[in-house]
Image (cartoon, rainbow, N blue to C red; front, side):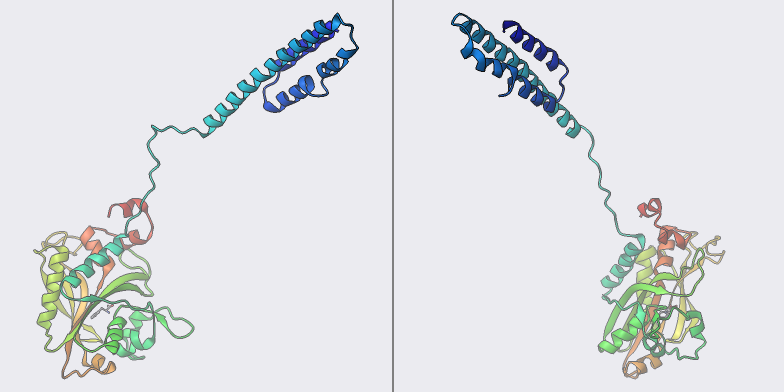
Length: 339
Ligand code: PHE
């Protein structure tokens, strides 16, 4: 029996060496220390032994059990530590590593330019209004003195919906909405998107932004228009900027002008950007045509006003020296990051 006990201990010693995970260790425990283990069977047989053998074998069995239990327990502790270790290792992070930066975006250059433009007019006492991008023929054309057969429609012929509405071709319809809504005095600017059937090139895009301006009150003159636009241009492009009003035509203003500023690139000396003229066009403007007042039921004997409309992309291109309108819309992060 003594030999048998030794054999059991020996094979436990051998088997424990090849165990490297807690499942096989549990199998080991059941096999050598469990209720149905050989040692347990031998223990049951002790009663059948002679008086002399009993204590000897009893002691040997206890010793064997203790030895095997220690083998088991040591490995169990070892495995727990290494399993914890590898779990920790897989979860471990290096506190000294620099953090992962979450990129925070910023406003698009067009949004910023709109804010810059509007801020200047807010300081001059104008309020900001917004109008819909899908407009009626009445607001976009008719009320602005552009009847259905007017040749000016051709430049504007645009994107129509099935219901007969169109994507507005300018922000001028917001003038109409403002005047239909309230009585003078009105001093408002309206930023927003416009749409035209233009082919894409360095200065054209079928969607672009304008800021519209409208001021209606008693005794408003062309001088007021000049003063406001001069203030604006000085603040936007610098106080040395000069303005030039060129006679022009818009169906909704009379007289009308196209306004140029002295070239921001050459200071008026002449370069390729201003085509050697020293001037760059930045907006259209004029005194509100009495026909427009008629359309919104304003008394044109009592009220006078001026309106203007500028292209935001154009202003931004001049101010930030950007030479292609397409840059604004290509989502080229390196370009956008600069502003
Ligand atoms: N609506 C005109 C355009 O888009 C600009 C403009 C606005 C001209 C107001 C005069 C007065 O070209």
